[in-house]
Structures are given as structure tokens and as C-alpha cells.
Amino acid sequence: MEQKLKTVEDKIKKIEGELNQLKEEVQVRDSEAHRRMDELKFSIDSLKGDTKDIKNGMSTILKKQESFTDFLKEIVSRTFRWFFLTIAVFAAIIGVLVNADLSHLF
Image (cartoon, rainbow, N blue to C red; front, side):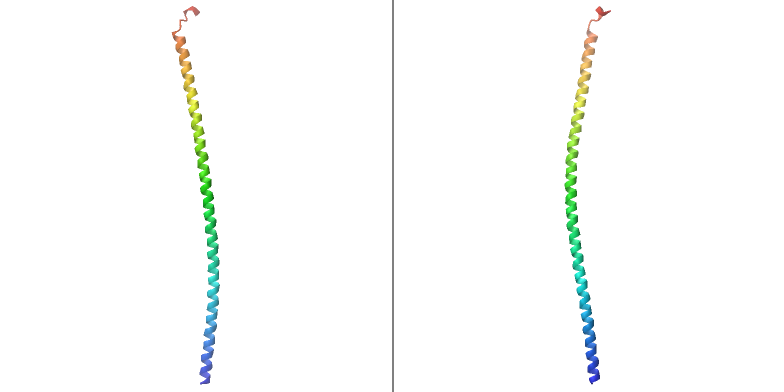
């Protein structure tokens, strides 16, 4: 009977040891999971910040592009205005010369 009692006590101690070992493994895995979650949270926060910076940069680029486009439109507008004004002046000069009586020059 004592032999059986000792065997049962040994089995209980063995099971308690295994339970303690499993408990330690669970604690290690739990702390590792929390560490990974903290790393992921940090990465997500970092990505949010990077995304915000990229968005602000793109907004700035688009504003500069719009102002540059307006600048180019103004240059083209002025160039065509001066070009057509010059053609009109030359046409007027040619019209005056064609209609002028140039017989006294010959």
C-alpha cells in the first residue's frame, strides 16, 4: 500500500513539474507575444507618420506644379499676344506701303 502511495505521490510530483514547466512556457510565449505586439504597434505608428509626411509632400508638390503650370500659361499667353501684335503691325505697315503711291520714288 505504501508502495502505491509513493508511486501516486511521484506521479503527482511529476505532473506538478510538467504543469510548472508548461506554465513557464506559457509565460515566456505570452511575454514574447506582447513584445511582438509592441513592435507591431511601433511599426504601425511609424508607417502612419511616414504616410502623413508623404501626403504632405505630395500636396506641396501639387501646389508647386499648379503654380508652375500657371506661370507657363502666362508665358505662352504673353508670347502669343506679342507674336500676333507683331504680325498685325507688320500687316498694317505692308498695307500702308501697298496702298501708298510710290510712283514718285521711281
